[in-house]
Image (cartoon, rainbow, N blue to C red; front, side, top):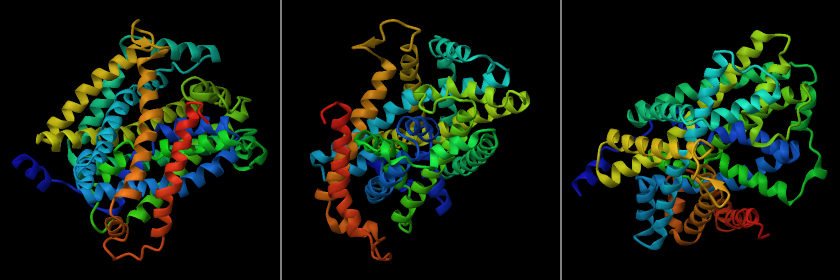
Length: 458
């Protein structure tokens, strides 16, 4: 009991509004924006998908984010304990534990992909990102199935994350976010500028901003909604954990809108970085998940074939950008589990962060080995890596998001919700009833549709 009281007394907070926005935006901005958003856009009609995606972020993503803000700030604890306090010991408290588990599992396999980004930085530095399309495909397949190299880079990226997390909220997470996020934006703008000046780039820009409404169908709506939740880091415990470090003066609605805008802006810039270059050299925009590690290195090489130095620099900056985006998300994912172990076990932050780092390194190593280096780490047609991705992304995330909306909209006292939404009456709360309607009805129904659709039930 004494340890728990000490943990509460020593609980830190962000030092400024800018720290709140950059840190929480860093949680949302990650490979989901720079990697997943472009290929989802390419596969779902371009501009039409983007329009629907924006609507999903505005009407569904932001209300869900505000809900996690309310639970996290009101609970002033790690995600599991915040839900436990709000639920009063009822079965609803399991939502918090599911959120922590989801964040922990995602950290383990997400670090593997983040490690690939570091390898590609190294490969760009030593000039290995040169060759024909078949070379890039062979390079990725051989590297990802190697028994040593991917694990080495997975450990490196997790150690970098540990060094940030162990320094705490202000000196670690907030300070790193204030450095990494502006750097990420600068790199994005540099590559966007280079991409948009290529011959034929206007076709890629048109693909992003000129909608073809004939492409609209149910799959596009569901894909956009799923991307909105994935991109905003909803239901992973990240938003709730970071909100527990918010001050009572933090405007939750305004913060959620600002983060949604930043997140969407990064996604659009990622599209402007990729599609003008892809169209310039005649590469299809629907290259799928292989777009980043197989297709794009070849695109940059072809696009800047007459300027080898520029090609070298753009390739290097691109994978540096990917690594920064991955690191900002890993910080928030790592913090979910670190805060949980620190407060539930009553141990120091360094010990809690070390537990998370070591355990995710081990799990990440097995996920990496399942991609080809070791037989026997696949079952029912999926590798261990694929199972982690499937269980967290397609099962846990929608379930946690759905239950969070139901809990806050139907079972949490409306006075508590209103007090947090209006900062205890200091804000007008003009959109409170709209927010409550969206959380009670629109959000859970849409999440349920996503969940059922991905299993072919609707």
